[in-house]
Amino acid sequence: MTDLVTATAADTAAAVASGVVSAVEVAQAHLDRITAVDPAVHAFLHVDTEGALQAARAVDARRAAGEPLGPLAGVPLALKDVLTMEGVPTTCGSRILAGWRPAYDATVTLRLKQAGVVILGKTNMDEFAMGSSTEHSAYGPTHNPWDLDRIPGGSGGGSAAAVAAFEAPLAIGTDTGGSIRQPAAVTGTVGVKPTYGGVSRYGLVALASSLDQAGPCARTVLDAALLHEVIAGHDPYDSTSIDAPVPPVVEAARSRDVRGLRIGVVHELTGEGYQPGVQQRFDEAVQLLTELGAEVVEVSCPHFPYALAAYYLILPSEASSNLAKFDGMRYGLRAGDDGSRSVEEVMSVTRAAGFGDEAIRRIILGTYALSAGYYDAYYGSAQKVRTLITRDFAAAFEQVDVLVSPTAPTTAFRLGEKLDDPLAMYLNDIATIPANLAGVPGMSLPVGLAPEDGLPVGLQVMAPVLADDRLYRVGGALEAALLDRWGRPLLEEAPQL
Amino acid sequence: MPSISRAEVEHLARLARLELDVPHLDRLAVQLDVILESVAKVSEVAAADVPLTSHPLPLTNVFRDDVVRPSLLPEQALSAAPAVEDGRFRVPRILDEEA
Figure 1 (cartoon, chains in turn blue, red):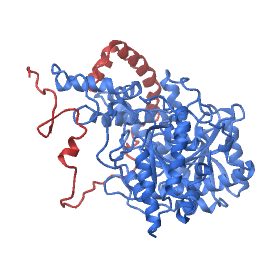
Figure 2 (cartoon, each protein chain N blue to C red):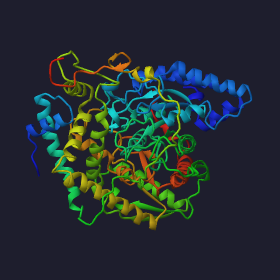
Figure 3 (cartoon, chains in turn purple, red):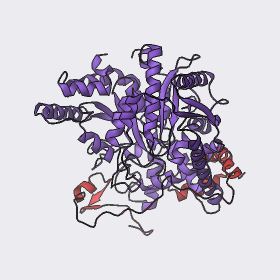
Figure 4 (cartoon, chains in turn purple, orange):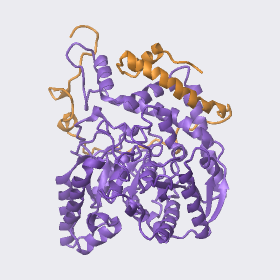
């Protein structure tokens, strides 16, 4: 492994800007790394070699011409396959979109291109972002770089694994119930779900429109902040995009100061159901925050135990509606069109052939929850729980500045272990879902390895709406203190691929 | 708790335009039972006086300026279509009679 692939995004950008290294050399080093390790990891569904080198050449040309470069110019990135990129395959991990090349860029993609970020390719994911393990990808699972027999989390397991395996210093994920934060936790990387509406959803293929949010994946808190700043901000193409200044996340990541900050440990997100080693590393990290000058108290959010149930009604309801557009008429797969079937029959054959088991399960569940006669009992009640959870957050944030919890109840489990038990799989999201329901921002950062299995543990920080900078303030301080304690980054403990 | 029958799942599948075989319908019926039993706990706290939240932000309609701007060309819009005829999407018959 070369220094070019282990460097942080911040250092790489500085090296490119000062001419120490060319963007093409950086891109080529990462493409070589992908060639070497991705057959084992399978983080990528598509590698855009030519496009990446062309983008890198453009950065080098701009530098040679003396033009100003953005803070991440020349830095490679892996893009989750749920965001459109003009002319590049976008499958969302589904057979129904096999071979689809979108005619337009998502706003996130466009902003990355404009910033001179070099997009290496598209990463693997659970189909339409439904899952916690990438095992629901139609193209086979991604493997956790820490142990190739284990899951990399999901749905954005490809993005997290690409970053953890040094295939890219940065990636974009999307988080509907934890799909950025849980993969970050189980791969020892940093992942942030921004405030809902903080990053444009234009060109993000919708799973649940009221929950989906794109955000950064990185190996350091500062790198995540730099990427956050590039992709965030108001977009007239997204009616739910917030028209407000982007919180000062980079400044906060650099401040590394939590003195006087009030931190609440969420009582309902600890203890029973959490693996002992996860709980231990979490408790140690909280202790460390106290030593750094933060004021730590326990806070109760009494309705959080109902979040998972509400989520698995709201998400399937919205998903069943959003996925209705995949009907085989204007793009994507069409099956069974042999002249004998009506349009409705062709749609039914196409959708059954194109969607995998989990997508079908959630479409049926959502259709049920929205049915006449069940609507009030299921979808209506879930929306009430959503109100109660939002109120829990509001009450908690009157007492404290941020909330913390373990990101996921366990470390990475084995591939196949929970595939036949949907409910067990859903439990992985128990700590991450409340933030999506309320629209508040959340971060996961690595706080050590669980003693019993030697696998990474993530700590989650949550902040009020549009206070994303507080995540980075806590994350930056904790990361620096842990680095002092460990003497080297956690990812250096991972086995060599 | 409702026990979901195969016929009910079949009805849902028809509403959702999914042509599923019998083993798949049976499997889904069992799984839906388990999932619905678990998510039904929302009713424990969903009191009558609690307002509904459909969305984390207050939603207001957003209009763009009413000006002509570039859009996809017809050939771009048709570029990913499974079937095209005379510059249009070609679809299977809509009506029930013979084509």
